[in-house]
Amino acid sequence: MRIKFLQLAAAFIIAASFASCGGGNKEGKLSDINAVEDKSGKVNVIEQAKPALMIIPSDQFLQRSGFLKTRQYNGRTVYDRDYAGFLLNNTTNKDVVRAIQNYFIGQGYPLNDLEQSIKSLNVQENMDDADGIVKDAKTLLVETVRPDIILEFDYELKNAKVSRTVTEERIDYSMAALDAFSNKSVASFVKTDIDGNFTTYLEKQLPSDMPKFVGQIKEYFKDIVVNGRDITFRVVVEGNSAVNLGDDYNDMGDTYADWIREWVKTNAKNGSANLNRNTNKEMFYTSVRVTNNGEDGTQFNAYDFANAFRKEFTKTFQIKSVNTTQGLGDASVMIK
Image (cartoon, rainbow, N blue to C red; front, side, top):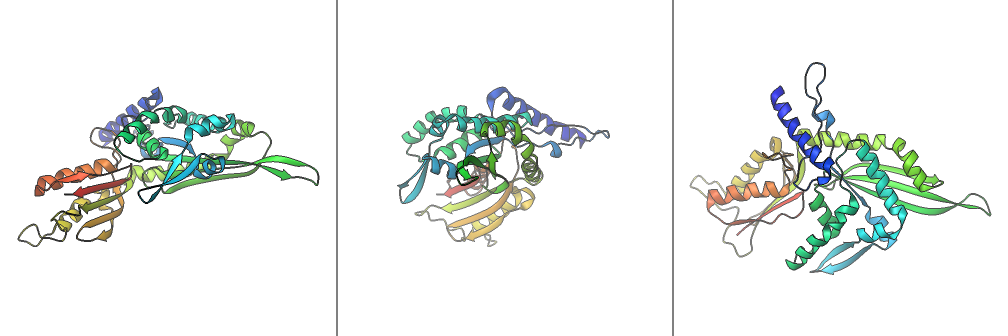
């Protein structure tokens, strides 16, 4: 067992080294988990788990600042987030990002630089435009950086009246941590009526206000390390297909839906998954727990889960299926 822990820890350390050298998570390496041995020689991997982070401004901040616009595309609302404009708007925006990044880097968290990540989006956006794919900047950032946790921050300058004739500039500041796979709220932090220079607060007072917030993130990620990531999984039959999930596929009365249920129970971590919809043309699962990393040590996400299903389904029934997954946390397969 000790050898197995050491092997796992070694893979995590390699991932951490890759991130610290500026490579980020380009190859989907799992987050930094430092292996330490206590006096009994037991490797404490779980306690040292540190998620990969991505820091971005909140949609509320972008909207107030004029960097979030909406438009209609094929009957649905698409959000256009201008992160590059946000960074170029004023130096305070950069100071906020830099202060948060510096704090978490100092704590040993794998972290990608927001400005450099944004620069890499132009090529991907051009490729998606050529393929007719519509993705907003946030989706592209998440798919490029592949973080475990997203840190969204917001701040607002306001004038507070301290007397009849005197007003002072005050600042409200908040930060929220979200699971990059499920979008669940992980932790939150609020500081109101900050007096004085905001940059000074970020440099000198922010670190003392962060321990509780960071502790919530660490506890949440410990659960992910132990119990797996939380994703959704959808199997849908193409409209003109002759396949019905309720049809028998053998003389024993077993249906395609039965086979899918057994596959999910077998491949979800500890069999954890909730079946929300079950029709002849669709099966939809929520709260599907999946392993954190694949056999090669790289990050295991919704696409990998869907691909494993697609391969086994096609091999078993000789029926074509396609992996239609978009994003880190929503696995989807279409049966032709």
